[in-house]
Length: 260
Image (cartoon, rainbow, N blue to C red; front, side):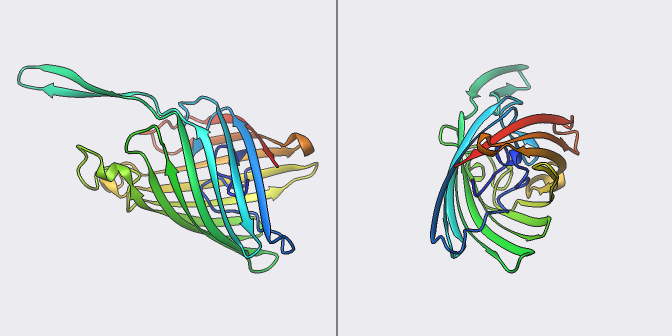
């Protein structure tokens, strides 16, 4: 998986925060196609569960050109829980259930970008990604982003350029999350350890355009992974959010990833 998104991505600890770290196609291979499949005990994206603390099966297809261009798609099951909307009459002291909204069952992302190594130690990446929830309602959004990696350190950011929630019925313009104007900043450290072990440390901050920082949050985490040859890569992971308006309990989960 070239794009290694959170969830399956964290099984390797290679891309903890967003699209950002991509394998650069070998110079002697003009076209490179790859696939991946993974299982995680909890799909976490930027510190927050996407599966109601349940497991996920994930996979993707990727294309890379030796110039640095790449494109791909990635799929995972999701569960955001069910929500109920009420019509409340404060004068009559009554309320009625207007509608029950069900969580989408899966997420399907499409992405493309350009990644290049400047030298053995320094590389950069620019990308665009569309997060789609085909069986959901007003949840899709799109980002553009970029990152730079120097040896074991990656710094990056992503900007939301479009969000369906901003045009959702009954939602005032700009009064939603995951819409145009949101920023996400992240950093990660990746180290190779003896005996095919790896260590990843990550942190990120979500700056939402809505509510003057009332929904913003930071998060951090750590991954210990072990490559097992043909059996893929296994990982033990820790993540936590630093704001009690979200679930700020420590989250521990395991992952497995196999690339083809």
